[in-house]
Image 1 (tube, rainbow, N blue to C red):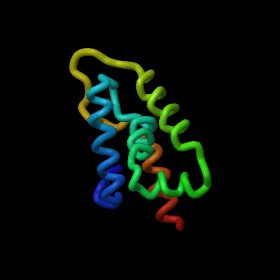
Image 2: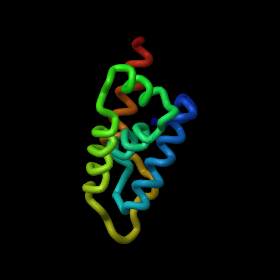
Image 3: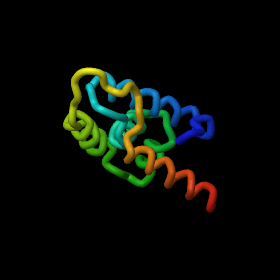
Length: 102
């Protein structure tokens, strides 16, 4: 996840929004659920358009991930601002590896 400049503009926007959401909700770190929740909120993004094309229940997915984010553990005191969780780092590392292999 070192090279955010490799991400699309929409992905960068989603990651920034996910970090803000995690901070607002007092979560210890930015989790994959934060990012997915933000991506699902991008009506003009490619992910939502693909999901619509394959007739996925987008509203159900949005509700599910919104609930998941709301139920993430909260921390008090000095939380890490916008730091990616180990799960999110693994997600980006896997995606990067797939891109290099492709």
